[in-house]
Amino acid sequence: MFNPQSRVRSIARNYLRAFHPGFAGLHGDRILRTLVRRLVNRYGITACIETGTYQGETAIFLARLNPSLPVYTCEIDGLAYEAASARFVDFANIMISRSSSPSFLKDLIDAKCCGELPLFWLDAHWLEYWPLRDELALITNQPHAAVIMIDDFEVPGKPQFGFDSTADYEAGAGVSEPIACGTDYVRPALNSGATYTIWLPAYHRKQAFPFWDLRPLRGYSLIIMNSPSLSSSLEEDPFLRRFFELQGPLCFSPNE
Image (cartoon, rainbow, N blue to C red; front, side):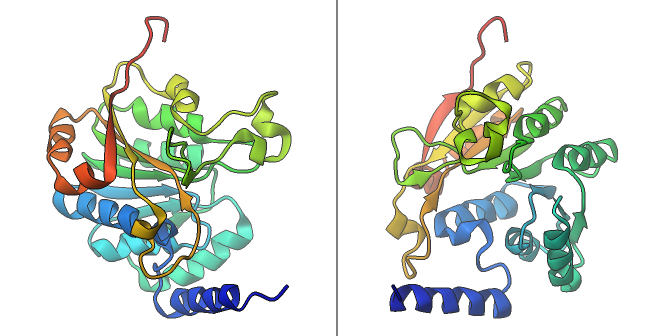
């Protein structure tokens, strides 16, 4: 059945993507976009690294925050890579790679491209292979501080936030029982010698999309690694106190 409202939304999205690149980055979620903008502008982010370029909207959003800030992104699908590359012509600070995300991250880390406080946006977990744990193992085995954000993350007690599960993808990502993309899933991949503070979103759809009811909310996590000073600053940040819940430090059992 034809839905006029849905059609209008589709036309609006296509127009904004064409004439306002980056509009749909980070799901178009106003709260999430403000969070990332604050992290970049106030807390000394040295590089932005995205896994899973797709249409390039998030990379363009990040690139526009600060033209001198390097933005590294990777895409494994050939068609998506070519399409995004064409969109990046006008953005000198975006570097795109066609590769798997673990290979991409290893190359960046080995080349020391990330600086002292990189921001990672991890969004390459799809199809039957989820690289998320491999990504996290590479990132967290480095001694530097980092801001790690994982898209499509389970937010317990907040059903308004959608999240990924291995049940959503072919072959169940190689496991017999579905597993949610959440804290229990990522914990085994983290270096237990590092320190982590986790924040999760705690707001509603109308706050994220005050003018356009474009899409469902997607969950995500904000993980601060090896930076007690940044964690303390964020605890005092009124924006985070209003829209996010501090989960506290991530603890490991003795055998982890």
